[in-house]
Amino acid sequence: MAGFLDRAKEQAQRGLAQGKQKVDEVQQQRAGADLLKRLGAAYYAERRGSGSPEATAAAVQALEAHIAVHGDGFLRGT
Image (cartoon, rainbow, N blue to C red; front, top):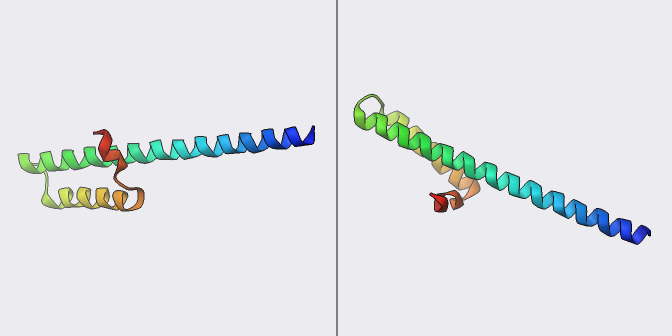
């Protein structure tokens, strides 16, 4: 009986770890999509004359920092 419970516990822990990993991936993708949105808004504002090149550069820098840490996988969904 103990062997069965140990296997069930291990399987449950693996499932939890996989679920946490998936949640982390989704959160990283959402953060990347948010940064892309901010970059688009900064660029649009700059082109219309109500934004600044500095704001656009800051948005690019934030996006590049996110990509350096988490990769660019979120770009494939857009």
